[in-house]
Length: 303
Image (cartoon, rainbow, N blue to C red):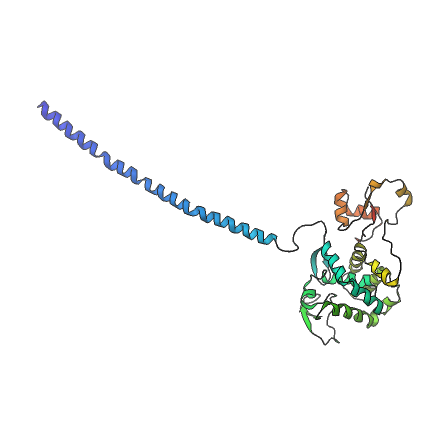
């Protein structure tokens, strides 16, 4: 009897041990999803890296876009076009066209400083769409007498007609003919040939530009890049770069050299004001400046 009882317990125990195998099998199979997850992660990793590389490439390409890098020597030229140019670009433009402006001054009596200053302003130093697509450096519209090629461009109105030239030199010559052939500009030729300020104001008064700040912009460019020197060369006069504004001499006598800043290439009123921690308006007031024009070699009170 006792043997039977012992035998029965053994059978029950063996059966119970056997039921543990399905539990072990289930436990192993439960690891399968974990392996699957690991495989998915491995597949995603290269994709993420590829995306990072692509973004880096795009960023590099964007940073190589010309004329968008920040610089202390940049300015916005706005007339027929609105573009940002560097000082180097303006100086290159001046070197390229200054002799044409001087020749036209001799032949037509228009100050070279005015011609070149307008060319810089109207064409964005040769980078504006009209100058690139039509070699039109002065924003001259077709008008009824124009029979040459033309281009449509949005200006005061949509799709206005502008003159098109085969080369920039033609645009410079046509600018001179445009001013000398119209009665409304006749009063300009009664002015002194080196009075660029009066010429700039006269152009606006005669209706050359609709921008009320046109004379200020033009004079500012002429003085900043000393284009009046070209007028002196044509007229055979000596040219002296401005060194000091008409400020109180007693005030100047009581100041040290550290109270002044001598303008160098690339300087603007804004960059100077930031350097000496004063506002542009204070800088203009201290130096009796009415516009934004400053010239290389000019001394400005900054204290």
